Image 1 (cartoon, rainbow, N blue to C red):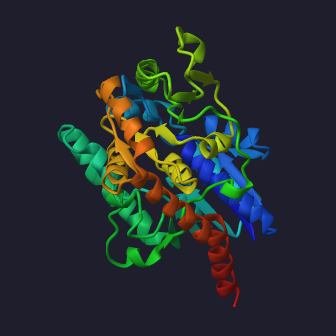
Image 2 (cartoon, one colour):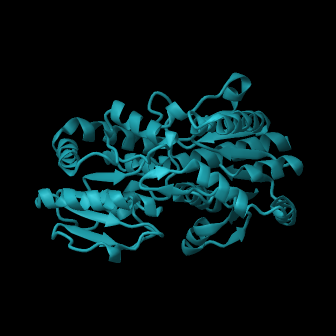
Image 3 (cartoon, rainbow, N blue to C red):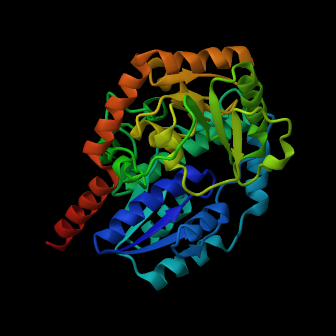
Length: 379
C-alpha cells in the first residue's frame, strides 16, 4: 500500500503516535509519506523521515497555565492559508496514496473525501464542542457548528482509530461521544507507541526518580517552577525535567542538587523506563507512553482544556496516578509524589496496563487492520 499520514501540528503527541504507526507500516513493506507543519514537521525530520509541508489547521494560545480559546481562534484565523485546500489536494494527487490517515487533521479528511480515497481518522476526542461551553453566546454557537461539522466527518470516514486501550481501560473515555452507526467504525488499537518497553535501554538515574515531561508551551512554565520548589522540600527524591521547544531552561536558576534539567530531546523513553513516576500535563499521548511503560502519572492538565482535564480525572479515578492543578501547593505535590512512590496499588495498576499494551501492540494492530481492509476492497 501507498499511505499518506497527515498530522495535526498542535501537540507533539499527535506526531509521536504517527511516527509509531509510520515505523510499523514501513517495516511491513508499505510506502509511507508524512504530511506535517510547524514543530511537528521538524520532529518528523529529526527522527530521520522526510515530511511534506501541509497547511496549518489550529494554533493554540495559552497564558499562565490556561488555554485561551478566543486568542487561539483568532490566531488560527489569522494564519489560515486560503489556498491551503488546493495545495493539499495537489500534494495528495501527486503522491497517489491508496489510503489517507489523518491524525486530527480535518482538512486532510476533506481532501481524502474529495479525491475518493479511503480515509482513516485517528483521534482521542469526539466532543470538541466541550471547549466552547460557558464561554458566551457567540462561542457556544461556534461550538454547535463545530459539533455538526465533526459529526458529518465521523459519518463519512472509513474507520476511526482510537489510539487507546479498549474499554474498560480507556483513558480518553470521557472525551468520546459517538452515536448511531458511527460506533461501528471505532477501532480501539491500543496505545500507538514508537518504542517497545523491552527494546528501550535503561539509564542510570538516582532513585527514587521522577521525570517531568511538562514541555511544549511556555505557559506551562509555572509547573516547572512548582516542581523545583517541590524538589527543595525533600532532597531524597530526584528529578529530571525535560523542557519543550518553546521553554528555555537557562532561565531557571538556583537549581537544587536533586534536579537536572535537560533541553528538549526527541527520545524520552529511556527516562520513562528508568523512572518511578512521571509528571505530565493531561495530553493523551504522553499518558499512553507512560502507562505502556508501567509508570504512574502525576497529571497537571491545562486549565480550561476540557480534554486534558477529563483524561486526568480518569487517571485519578482508575488509580493510575493523581490529578493535580496549577494551584496545588508544592507541599501537596510532594505528598502526592510520596503516595505514588510508596503505595504499591498504583504500580500494580500501571503494570497491568503495561502488559496489556504489549499484548495489544497498537501499531501492529492498525497495520493489520489496514491490510485486511485493503485486501477486502481488492477482492
